[in-house]
Image (cartoon, rainbow, N blue to C red; front, side):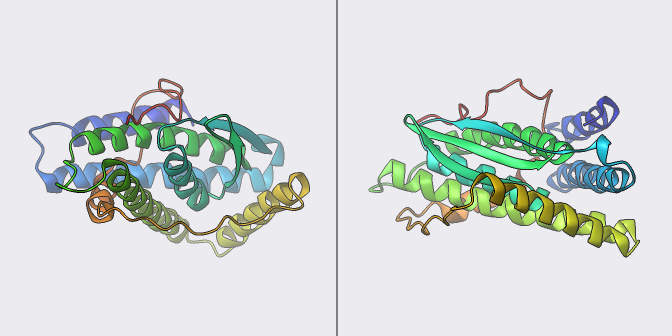
Length: 235
């Protein structure tokens, strides 16, 4: 992502976090930051359609470590999918090595957002009391599931809005082609890939986690790489 775009997003998020902001003002600044990142994705896709060398398909591995490694992996997938990237989860030590596939600009967007959202999730969990009598780990896993689901919905909405704003019918075709190319790359590397079984979560934190996800800042705060992915959430 360009430095100019990052600067705009940082300014918007700084305003959103100002204690003097009303909830309505904060939400407006956050929405604008999300809109900028989505618009950037569409712009890069259209540029690459004219000059493929500007945005090649690639991959990277993101280490997701314990505790709550599976839940963090779920958050990464919730961010990656709306941004037209695909994740393959591989066991690695006590956590996972998440093999991420996508176009270079989309991989960068995922990295920025995931890094920021890990920290936001950690802060949200720290501020949320576990109900009396409930197992803390079960509550936190369900909280993280709600957080990830809400973030994913918001990102899909932002991406759809950017496509609509672009206006040209060809935009949807360009993005669909990009998604197909990423999926083909995944199939080349993992021809026997299987879908993981759905999880069953017993905790009651889903609702409060989803509410936190709806409030989360979807623009990435600070520079990429300030926080190592996978290390933002404690026990």
